Structure formats: C-alpha cells, structure tokens
Length: 314
Ligand SMILES: C[S@@+](CC[C@H](N)C(=O)[O-])C[C@H]1O[C@@H](n2cnc3c(N)ncnc32)[C@H](O)[C@@H]1O
Image 1: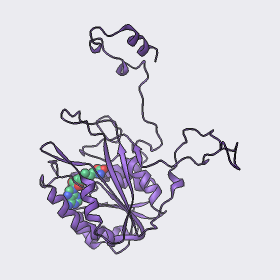
Image 2: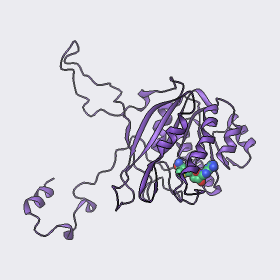
Image 3: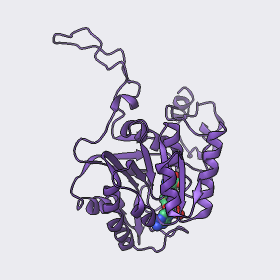
Image 4: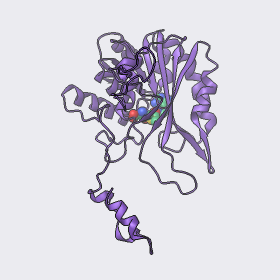
C-alpha cells in the first residue's frame, strides 16, 4: 500500500501489511516508528549531485540530513539489527569525495553502532570518464547494533573456485578442505548495476539491483523481520525483502517513485515480477558474438598478424 499518512503507514506495518510505502520525507516516518522495531535498515540516500530529487548540490546538506537520520535509525533498529548504507561519490570541480567518508564520520558519533564491513560493490557499466578512470564501484557500509548483530553466513555462501581442493598436510591431509556449503562471498561483490537493458529497469534513475539487497537481507535479517528503506525510490529493497519472506516499509518524497515501487510489488504478488536472480553468473560474450568482435577500423595500421591470429584462436 501507498499512503501519505504517517500514522496509517506505521499502523499498517505493525499489523499484517507486508509492503508499505510512505509518500513523504523519511525523517517524518522515522520519527513515528516504534523503538527497536526494524530488523534492518538499508538504503542509498541522495548524493546531492544534481538529480531531480536532490534539493541542492551541497555536500553540507548530505551531512546535515545524516546527522538528523542517524540517531533515529539507531533508535528504531532492533537489538541485534543491522544497518546498511550504500553510497558512491560526490563530484565537484573534478574533485571526487567518497560519500562513505561522510557516512562514517556521522555514524561514528552514534555510540553502539559497530562497523562490520565496508563492502565494495563492483559493476561493469557506467559513464566513460575522460578526465579520470571510469567509476565502476560504490561502497556499502554495514553497521551492526552492538557488536553481536545478526549474521548468517551460510545463507549467502557462493560456489568455491576449487571445490576439489584437499588439505595437503596435517591430520586432515588428503581430505577435502572446502566447506560443502560454499565459500564466503567476500567483501567485494560483482553485481550488475541497473542500466537500460537490465530486466529490472524502471523510470527511476538510480535503482538498486534487487540482488544487491537480497544478499544483505538473506544474511543480516531473521525470518519475519521488517526491513526499512528511508529513501526507497523504485522499491528495490522492498522487493528484495518480500522475495526473502520479510516485511517492508519505505519512504520516498516522490509519488511517481512510490507508484513504481507499489506496481513492482503487485507484479511480485501476481508472479509477474522480472528480476535478476542473485545466483546468476555475470554474462560474458563468447568470441563468436558480434559484440565481441573487433570492427575492421579498430585494427591499427601495422598491427601484426600474430596478434590477430592469437585473438582469433582465443
Ligand atoms: C538514490 S535514490 C534511491 C533509489 C533506490 N535505492 C532504488 O532502488 O530505487 C534516493 C531517493 O530518495 C528520495 N528522497 C529524497 N529526499 C527524500 C526524503 N527526505 N525522504 C524520503 N525520500 C527522499 C528520492 O526521491 C529518490 O528516489
């Protein structure tokens, strides 16, 4: 459901509703959410980079908003809850500022929050920079409430590179050394970002891929938990939450984005939602795909035939 009434939103999430979107400022919603009622808060806030929803181009506004939100997020987080803040860079006059520095600076003032991981999200597509190396990563700061916040690694293990590897010495010599459930996915995640041809693309300019949040929800929340996204946008966090059997409450000031989120939820309910599964491998073109072939004019004059031949036999 979508509502612009904060009491209706809070009432809905504390009763039976699975997916609630508040159309209004997250600060207003968070003020009304009961203490310790959210299992996880996950979000990507505005970067103040001139998007239509950014109220300014000022980094100081990013700090100001976070100083208001951080204590509220802590208050509404469950005793063993987790908080995940995904950010990129604020760029001004050719100077890049990593926004996780700002998040770290503000969140370190909240006693009781523990930084558990700084995850690098690597993705393959984006603008081709001319004055610096093209940006192909952003970060997620994962904080736990206290030091023992909920974490279930086994639910998010990934296949080993060498499952047949064995111990080569010691008492277990000759036995398989890997965990049959798979390996730890590490703190570098390669998950495609949502660009024009992605199955999840909506009219929102900077959506989360569902898989990114799904891994967090799966590892960092208990069954039955409620997930909150204060800057919900197209509702990707909500989709990840309901795919994992969790409840969701989000806020967004744009009615159009709230409606996108709600229609994605309705598609999920009717079994028609398209999303990229977390387990799917990154697509690699084969050498016979036309996109993988170098057009004739890319070959520099004088390029040696051995190079062409080695490419052709790859
Ligand atoms: C970076 S986008 C988040 C996109 C989202 N992760 C998704 O998957 O679509 C930030 C969102 O915050 C919303 N927004 C900006 N200020 C807000 C506020 N004070 N409260 C709630 N939402 C706000 C914008 O409309 C925008 O959709």
